[in-house]
Amino acid sequence: MRTQRSKLSRSTLGWTSVAALGVLLISLIVIFDYTLEGWQIDLTENHLYTLSRGTRRILAGIREPIDLDFFYSSRAAQNLPQLRAYADHVKNFLKEIADDAHGKIRLHIIDPQPYSVAEDRAAALGVTGMPLNAAGSKFYFGLAGTNSTNGQQAIPFFDPSKQRFLEYDIAKLIYRLAHPHKPVVAWYSSLPMTGGYNAQTGQFRQPWLIYRQAAQLYDLHTLSPHAKVIPQDTRVLVLVDPHSLSPATRFAIDQYALRGGHILAFLNPATGSAGPGGPSMSPGSDLPKLLPAWGVHFNPNEIVADRSQALSVSGPDGTPTENPLFIGLGRRDMSQRDVITAGLSNINVADAGYLSPRKGSQTTFEPLMWTSADAEPVPAQRASLLQPVSLLEGFAPTGKRYTLAARVTGMVKSAFPDGPPKGAIVPAGLSDLKASVKPLNLVVVADSNMLADYMWVRQLNLFGQPLAQAWASNGDLVLNALDNLAGSNDLISIRGKAGYTRPFTRVQALRRVAEARYRAEQLRLQQQLRQTERQLTLLQSQRNNKSTLILTPAQQQEIRHFESERLTIRKRLRAVQAGLVRSIDRLGTELKAINIIIMPGFFALAALLAAAWRRRRHSTSSTSGDRT
Image (cartoon, rainbow, N blue to C red; front, side, top):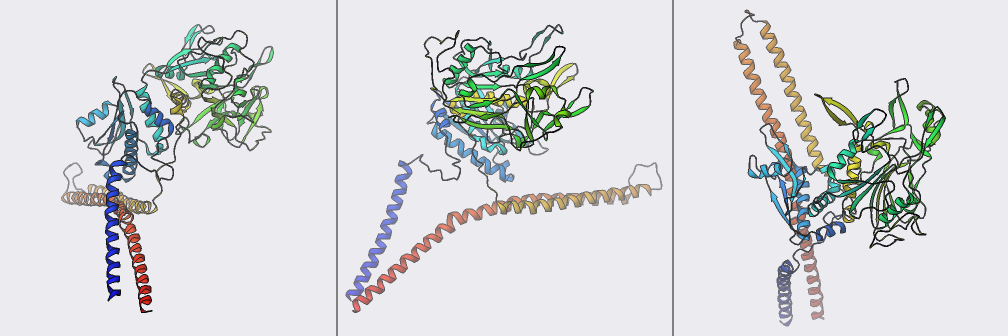
């Protein structure tokens, strides 16, 4: 009797404990829901929802509220499963940014319906709609931002192929709204990029196209080769073929770099020409003292030749000839992890040198563009005086890829450790720095010829108006670099993340099956169309009266049969597409059910069975003890 009461007491105590634990669990959930609101743990492999330090600092620097309008056609996306998944990722990321801004960013999620006020607002703010059908319906998937001074910025369409740079693009939009003024760019060039009067032709030269484009986007200030200071409000310093800079100017550049300056430099190896007085060489631009202090090695006396990437140029007699000194780079020759070069199609360079990191340097050297392995360095004097055919004779590739452009970042020391050179000055209120106070941000390209119009632009004449048509991405490279460097160090520090998408093999298999069915139906429709046309032609040729335009009953019946068959096949095509969406949605529902219900239920059942087994084992041992 006592044993039965003990068992009943233990059973009651066990269920009471389970109930108490349940009440405690529910209470903790309610308490944590209020006290830990906004807290999260990003368990994704690549930390897709964790904001970088640069983004957090940009958000912390917002002074006035910014409105972000996320235009997303959620209803139209029902038949676009891939875009729908990416849109959910973008929306969640925007919510994370708005939460981290602590009220400085007001996020509005808008589903613009056709011919609505919201659709008109999307178009007015620069968000582009993608046409969906002949009826004029559009799919919107973009972001527009406005600030308190009516400034506007937009991402017209979130391209899934650029998902790696999602955080950078959104952070750049917010940074521009928070800092709406045109960035100041100090521009030095020893080449005639700015145009002007040509004494040889007696005419005025137009500025190079890339210079004109930059002048539209930035506040450009021309820098003299004898400048003794870099203006303090300079966001980017551009140096094009800087071979004639005075020591005082190089010292000013050195101090600008030590204060965390952003520099875009286009260097050039020495080039030669054959004239009446014999061969002559123009100096290369290697920024003496500065490049070594920044951890970059560049030999102005060598030009890199690439046999497999050689472009075809006109020879002395006008015959097209492959010149290994004129190199055409494709996507595989450019970094897809850096926002400056990612997405560019092709870059052309001519008489380019190559870059490499100096041993013992503390800076980070990241290649942006490189040659193929079928390349070799050639002495500059020899390369400039020989014909392309002569260069290819005895060509001996080293099997090494040579870096043509690189991003260099980090803390550096002064290139003038012994103090300012003669003629240099230190601006009032500033000191002569010996080491960096902020990290250097440098993008350096071992070629300046690539900026010339003939390297990437085709000049056309349209109804008497000049028109420039780009056939290479040289201009985009420069504008991307300026766009990146013109931002703050926080913006520059944001790097591309790995893509959020992963291959779903079952979804891909469903899509392949559906596409195969679609193609089969399409081929069947085309075959029936051709067959019907042949029948109509045959019937037309068998008419008794060749001049009449009235169709015979057989022709009319054949046309009605064709139209009925065409409508039937169109319905089948729509059914195939709808079935694809339903199959993917069904698969998603199954996965959710497995993750949310079945797997937790399985573990819960396993826990209950384990608890019952322990209780039974304990009960058996207790019974044996009582008998004893």
